[in-house]
Length: 235
Image (cartoon, rainbow, N blue to C red):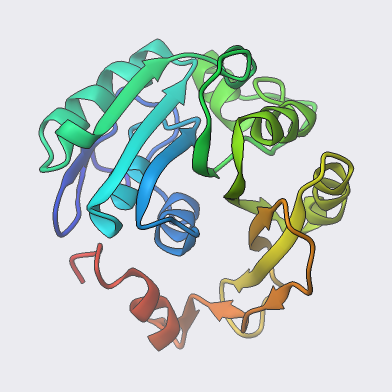
């Protein structure tokens, strides 16, 4: 995924001006996230617009807002959206989540591939640092903004490192958000899960633990991974 553009079945993503390129994490949450059939969706940290475009493909009646604080990424996301078949249903704004949370807008679903690296040694590229590290959007800010913007029946889906999941879930619980479904992600069957896909809602209940998603086996993509992403990838 190191080229300047990445072609999907129904749209093409240019990402040469974005700090975060098209990657497996974004594709996974875009394909797996819980989406309503209609209503309004918020894509937090939209980057090149990947998840917003995937959501538009999945739900033809959904209205989508993507926000980001990176001006170059916003410009490129707007170009990607405009060149897609879904441009009339997607807005891209240069805006932070805390600022949007001060508005009266509410969303039926919120999705995010959040910054979650906390290393002391940050990357030399400032825009990449902002995109990759929690200094740009802390988990506390993400949960607080989501709790304020989500409708009573809305859902919040994201991907996280497994090492951060427990503390993130506790933040959600303190803000009145409860785990509804979760799926661990492994690179291969032999490796430990390093990612977890999760959906949170306001209603409490017994969460659904979905089968572990294994991406590759014997240098081949697994059937589960193909089934999840087949509507998007040009295999």
